[in-house]
Length: 344
Image 1 (cartoon, one colour):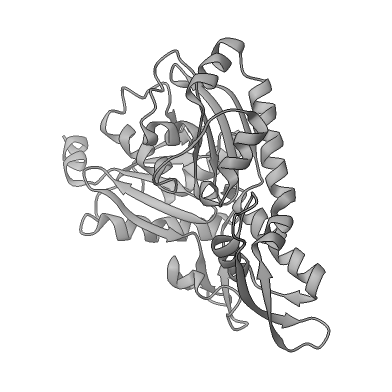
Image 2 (cartoon, rainbow, N blue to C red):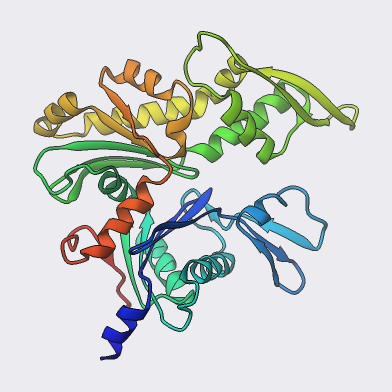
């Protein structure tokens, strides 16, 4: 009786717990929250100052006693305590008035996650207030979110480039047939830009500035008309603030290393694909999701490298959470896909 009552009152939740952003989907409502995965904490009292966008605005700008922390690194939990605080706050915001009932939660995780990391995610969600926790591999969630027929025997290939990981998977019959999960993605691109500017111009820029450069003038393939942008940072020689102009050509050069690693991982995944499914992929092409799909010219570059059609979906940032959200309606239908958390 209580279980029926709690089902009736609680809003079941799907979460894309990302290195860069966390998205929350509520059954019957859709996406209710999309915030950066950042928490600002008072170092001495451990009191939370801000969570999400407000905390991200503090990155690199806090006084000594406040730390703006990104608790996830490469798609997995790096700081257990802070992740729990963040999850608790995001669940609280999304549940609105239904605070007294614990929701069922489906969390999307990288396909290359270890058993220990799975347990950490599950424990975190339970401590943050979940009644039941299910995990779903990000590439499958993305495929469901895009509307691919994951339960059919035909092969679908997806490349999901997030903040911390790039997930490449061939999916058929509700499972991952071959996959490659590498911890090279948006964050590594930002780091590559920081080190390029430092190496070339002796200018130190912050990670938020690097991300802005990537979004505004970042490109993986030659543009018809190259872009440029003014960048402010600290001159490492003179020690004073300085402004300089960067071009999209330079940023393409800066990004070449992480992008070539993603390209190699995609080729390796294609080599490991069974021939019958490879034939399906030649017909259907590769679906690209995640924030990395928004990098200019990346689809063109991958198409050139693989000779396969690359299809970037309409809203690549939300596919994973939408797919995880779809599984809330029919948990039994997705039994083979969802990994229920088991206690030891």
